[in-house]
Figure 1 (cartoon, rainbow, N blue to C red):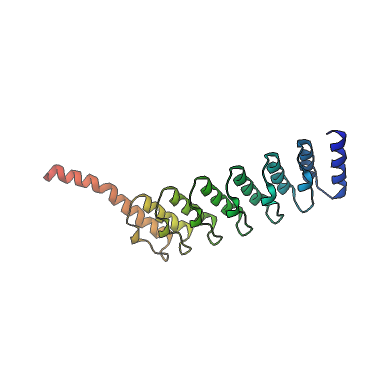
Figure 2 (figure 1 turned 60 degrees about the vertical axis):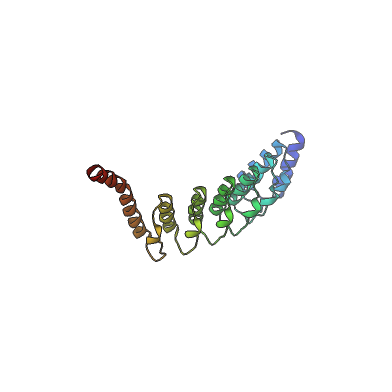
Length: 205
């Protein structure tokens, strides 16, 4: 650091009781030429400081996630979305855990209609099953409801992918293990049926 940078660092370091990790990110920011006063505050822990610093280094508008109530993992998901030019206002909300933010971000990156699962009422694993269904152009309205656990959603989604009659086990009161048994049984029948038809045609055709 040059003399001016060193003076700024000493001023900030002496002003607050920062730990070594926080001091490292302040020093890094000063050397990188970013405005460290944006995050050189005790309200941010070192993980949060790192995410703000990464954003500043990449010329990202970090104002979207400067709220110290966001943990560093939430900040990371918002920063990644901003870096990719996404409308992060859809998920940059305290009500979403970082895993939920991640599922929404990944959906936006793939151009999916994330409105189908952008609600904190869905766990991130439920969101994932809905996202998988959207990517495969499935009728996710069949299972995109909190009546189903993520395990049940998975069995319904797999059944739709395999073109099975999922109405047989489309029941929120049925355990996912039972659903799986029904699905695997139907899939086995489906796989054997063409062979049986060919065999019958050979014998009697």
